[in-house]
Amino acid sequence: MATGLSISSTSNLTSGQKILVAAAKMAYEPAAPDPDLVEVHNIPQGHKTWDILTYARLSSATALTEGVDLAQNQQLVTASLSIEPAEHGVIATLSKRLIRRQGDADVMASTGTMLANSLRRREAADVVALYDGFSKSIVGTSNTLDITHFRGGVAYLLTDNDSGYGPAPLPLHAALHIEQISDIILDISDPGTAAGNRPAGLGDDMLQRWWRGNDRLYGVSIFHSGIIERDSSDDSKGALFAKEALALVHANEAEATEQPDHSLRAVEVGIFQEWGEAERADPHGVEVYSDTTSTV
Image (tube, rainbow, N blue to C red; front, side, top):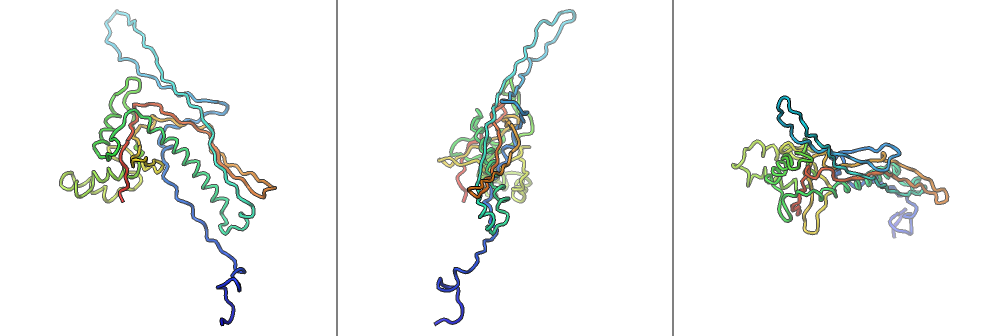
């Protein structure tokens, strides 16, 4: 028969013990750089929609003859894009009892951070959805992205493919699934395929220094977009584009709210923002559609 006090069973002091909850950890958010990679416009208060005009180029100047009137006038032509922002938001309700008794004293601040992350994730997903709209697509389903496709995509964007838009302005960005980026690294630096076939300098640098977060290839900044998903065939759609190829319109800054409900003894916290997004210049973007089957 045991002697002394024991907390190992409900017959003794188990129910009398305080429970200490360690500071909670938040789920790590996927990288969502996409809204920062596109052209952003802010609508002044009182406006419903935002029209973005792009002027087409005039035809080339002509050689003149002295004393002969230049009778041909140029016609100004614009491509018009109208974007009407829609409201987005997310809320969470915390009981005052939870706020008082939660071991994590920063439960309100943590909730605010998670709400902001949720809003950002939705905005990034809306931008990512535009990548599928580019008419030009490289690689193709079930094929892996390689340096040749990437180089060809850059060459396409810098070619004068459309008189209304002209070649894409620099700088260019690439927003890709992480397995697409991994495939490029493999093509450039894998010792089994690259050693002896390519200059060692670039491959060595890739092996030693990739994943710094500010990498460039052919002058293009490469961003890992964690919002890009695999489809049912293990393929993903990223993009290679100029900033002004896509437009994001904000009607307001993100608005945080806090509303107490006294009868419920709770506090409703939320964050809201209006935005709209659209493709502005189709010739200035390339969809990167390739296999992203998990490497491991």
